[in-house]
Image 1 (cartoon, rainbow, N blue to C red):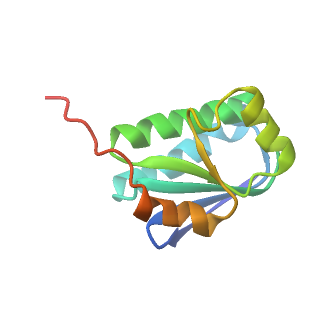
Image 2 (image 1 turned 120 degrees about the horizontal axis):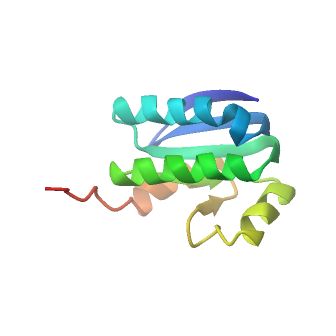
Length: 124
């Protein structure tokens, strides 16, 4: 697996290439998201167009990142899902209820302008 990050208008795009096995790659993925969050980039699009396989621990890494970014007032939105990976998210009932999914990186990034995430809640 390889991870590339690019800024794309209202979001940072994290492109995952190859197999995303959370038990193997999850820590690297979480670290990338943590680095983005620390630099103030909390609107993330995960581009899954070149991801050929994902296991349940990969989904767990995505959920962990989503939770962390939502606490910071951001969000994780998914783009370019291949049919097999999309089916995994549908079977687990994560699309719509947990993750929003978009046909393209551009539409996912644009969604941050038209549908921004909820602001971070104060814990004081």
